[in-house]
Length: 198
Image (cartoon, rainbow, N blue to C red):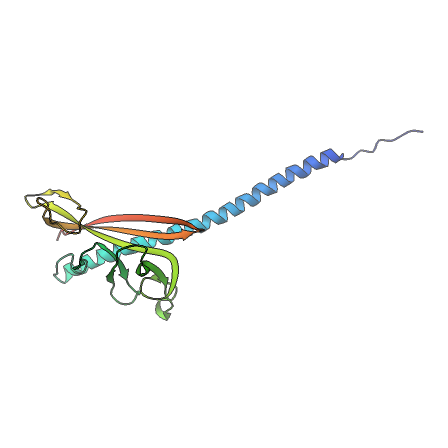
């Protein structure tokens, strides 16, 4: 009797093929999920950067408005009671003001999402639903030596009350934004120097 060998796949060959296909699918699924996670992280970074830029633009707008009204360039940007940290209070409709607060952890620093019809969905510190973001603005004076304005410093205190650097020539505005992402605290800081060059 003649035995015919049937051609086909052996069990080992089938296992190797399934292994290769499953590794390819695993790699593709891993890339998809990693992309989704990075997209969410990038979205939070973009929101935080825009919040920080908005604070710096509000300070610049206040300085420019003071110039137009022939006021001191830092009018409304000083805390008479002391302290350099504040939160912009702006609902998107009225002129912005600043609420002085000591820390980014204070409740006043929490960013809210507006529920008002005219500004629904926009971020603000005035009213609305709380978000995971907090922001704080620090305004430090840029002080110069009155005899040589090119020699300047940014003191740790909120005033130009030093023995040499007594003339205030500008403001360093620093914007800090903090948020939580999956239980991890994230921070973003940007700053700009605004001078009284008028």
